[in-house]
Length: 304
Image (cartoon, rainbow, N blue to C red; front, side, top):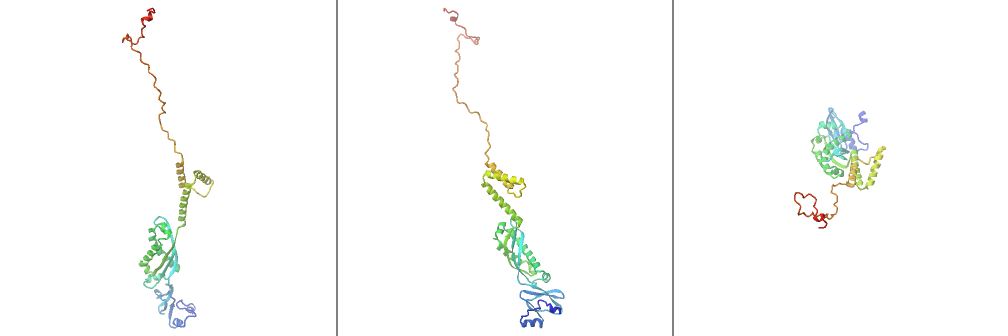
């Protein structure tokens, strides 16, 4: 009675179902799953296979019906964080993954027996991890700017889809990637803050170069005063201060250079006239050349 009140999904039917459908299910022993679904069959309490979609039969001796597994396409969003770019800057890619899971061959029984018991969220996580592992191979081939601009997204999508189809383990798991779409590139909050800070520094440096020197000094003085009072907003950093010092150094008057030089020359004056030497005395001899001159006889005798 209990099984009739709570029939298995493969045995139930809608009240308005066609009569032939009811006859097959109730009187002929068929089971039925809708399109896009299969029913797991256990034989002697061990995973045996998956049957459907549509009508199928189950042996009443050693077989029982288990989980209903969706083999139609499933879609899950993703956000792959901290993917490496060509530069040492992390990037986050987000988008959607469309895939299918089919426990029937060529999927292996041992692997399918475990996957059919996973919840939809767990299966989403499994496919996301597989696609993320493949995506990490290709993002380092592109620069951070290119990944931010979404230009290489089609190339990455095609490469990941091709690698997914080639992996033997994913084939044995019964997983197929139907569509992989990268919708946008995001930057982690910490990285975005660093990029904004760097852009602000470049902007400040460019503005500072255009400010008059007196306004620049006033802004620096105001900043230092606010900091001394416990201000929390910092508008200057060591790079800005270094730029300011360089501007001050370039704008300052060049230092005075002292050059040793001779005093200016006095205008040339005519040389003093040289006194002609006294005429040599004919009566002077070599022995008394230094003696005073002798008086003439007329000096001794005025009458002469």
